[in-house]
Image (cartoon, rainbow, N blue to C red; front, side):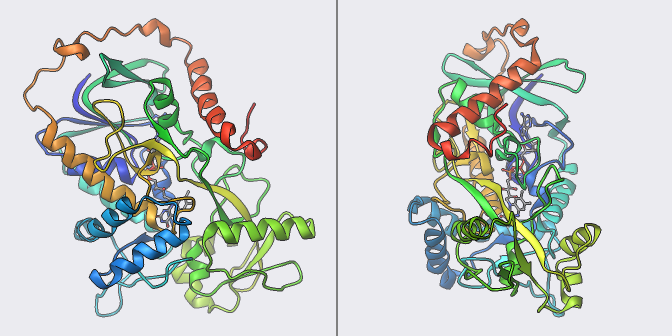
Length: 440
Ligand SMILES: Cc1cc2nc3c(=O)[nH]c(=O)nc-3n(C[C@H](O)[C@H](O)[C@H](O)COP(=O)(O)OP(=O)(O)OC[C@H]3O[C@@H](n4cnc5c(N)ncnc54)[C@H](O)[C@@H]3O)c2cc1C
């Protein structure tokens, strides 16, 4: 199958990239599960905006503060400067962000943001962004979707990326050739025992980059969210959004005492929860939203409220047991300001890309924004550089790329090798995560 652009991943980064690619280019989006099986769909709290020039410096300061000043300043400035045009595009597509009675957009706050600058759709922001992007995508005839196709390898020839190889649910090997390939394959939570992420996200972008000598950075920078619902039975940890603390919920120890400023950066709050757990021997602490009005909680935090009810907890009345859980990957495939990796023709954006935005700790709600800004940049670079009418197959080194399909017969073995590559990379720098990574 031949395409101009192959996008791996159907989250915000993948779809927004596709929507910004010229409509005369043939695009394939490949995803290893149902379209909505991405972390984007799960995002609760919201998406950061930069509210005009007067907010620019403050956004930059907050992002640097949360990231321990280990962020790339050029990237942080770029995001600050390009947030508005991309957020406006999203709003114009019709995402149902919360508004006041006069139709003005409402903004919420999360930890380490010094002001209210986060747009939200109650507590299911990611779902509504995703559904809006999908509606938009249905209008585009140039985009073809392949769901439940698992990517196993990159096709590389003569030092350039030429496509990807994967298998469908009947284990049939499929070969996609493309002039440009975009990795938008999301995070690594599927490798962890306890994670808020979808289980199908196993850092394939890192595995393939490592395999083909593409640059990766900061693989040890892994964020643990402070407040996942404590439920030893569930396979995926259910997140309780930071915006609940932004609206006033408190953290308490088993005796009911507060032990940390709930609005400090995530890594600091998570560390103090871990310290408290160690001190008390309890596997959880409590999140207390009982001082917030029940009617407010039921509407504003509808998804969380209803989910907790199913688990036997009333958010308006009960203390909720919470613990830390793997949540976000700050490292990734190294990219430049256009999302280009070190391999010709290969781009990366979204959670799997390392742009330097987050430093050692991501500021809440900056991830969806990064997916937009860099998705747009990747698309712009592709639009500028792709040679439209160039025939693909039979030309250049890609045309000559000879792929031995027989090398891909043992699919399970390849998947295990890919998984292992990522785990080994992480353990080289984060031996402390040995127990958290399901190594066997
Ligand atoms: C519970 C939760 C709440 C969150 N809340 C927020 C929030 O409020 N605000 C915020 O900014 N961020 C939030 N985040 C983080 C944010 O949702 C993600 O970082 C962001 O959505 C990542 O987008 P993405 O497009 O890079 O990846 P994803 O949306 O995760 O998409 C990855 C895609 O890659 C595909 N894929 C993976 N491996 C393969 C493979 N081998 N073959 C083919 N396809 C593959 C998947 O099928 C999927 O389509 C939250 C995350 C979680 C888990």
